[in-house]
Length: 379
Image 1 (cartoon, rainbow, N blue to C red):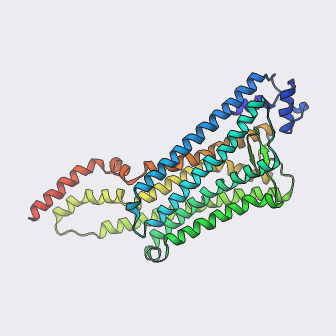
Image 2: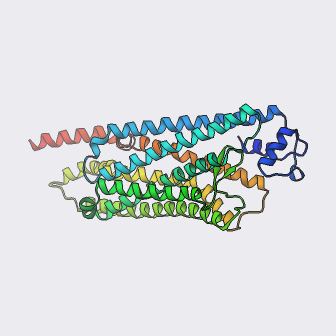
C-alpha cells in the first residue's frame, strides 16, 4: 500500500461503517478525519496493492538468498584456508538470517493481508499473534545488523593483526559469536512476553512492532531506544572498522608494491600490470569490497527507520500529522526490508570471478602473453 493510498484510507470524514471500523482500529476519531469518501472498491484495491508488494518482496528475497547460499556452497573450496573460513561462516549466517527474515515475517504479513481482503475491512490481530509477529520482526531486524558488524570486526582483525587472527580466530569461535549475537537479539525480542513492554499493531494493520507512536510506558520507550541504539551502533562500528581496514589494506599493498624488486628492469616493467591486477583481484580485496558494499546497503536501507524512531522517542520529531509519521515509518520499514534482498546480490555480484572480468579482463590476455614471453626468454 502506497503512502497516498494509506492517507486516503484513513483521513476521511464521511465514511461507511466499514471505514469507521478501520478508523477505530487505528485510533482515529471521526472528528479528526478529513478527506474524500472511501468506497469498498478503493479499500480492496489498496489492500490488493499491499498484498502484491508483500508477495513480490517475499518471493524475490527468498530466491536471492537461496541463490547466494548456493554460490557460497559451490565456492567453499576457495575458503578452506583458516584465514578465510571465519568470513565464510559469517556470510553464511548473514544470508540465513536474511532468508529467515523474509520467509517467516512474510508469511505473517501475508496472513494479515489475506484476512483483511477476505473480510473487506481492517481486522486487528489477536494479542498473542501480534506479540509473536513483533518478536520475529525485532529478532530478524537486529540479526543482520549485528552479523554485519561482526563481519567488519573480523576483517579488521584479519587485516591489521594477521598473525593473531590466524592463530586465534577459528570457525568454532565464529560460531560462538553468531550464537551470542543471536541470543542478544532474541532476548530483546522476547522481553514483552515476560511483561517488559508490549507489541502493538502498526499502520496499515498488517504488521506488529514495538509501540513507536506515543509509547504508553517508560519501558516501551526504553525498548524502542534500545532497538534503535543497537542498530545504529552496529552500523557505526561497521563503518569505522571498514574505514580502518581499507586504510590498512591499501598501506600494506603500497608497501608490498614499493618493496618488490625484480631481477631485471625489463621483468619489472612487464610485472607492473600484473601487480596492479593482483591488487584489485586478490581475495582480501574481494572480501573487503563485499563488506563495504554490504555496509553501505545496510546504512542506506536501515538508517531512515532507525533514526526516525530514535528521534520520536526523544520528542525531537518534526511537527506533522500522525498519519504522515505513520506513513514515514511504513516507508522506512519497506526500505529496511530491501536490505535483506540486496545482501545476497552484493555477494553474488562482487565475487572474485565477477571482479576478474570487470577489473582485470583487459589485462588478462596481456598478462598471459607477458608470462609466456618471460618463460621463453628464461629458457
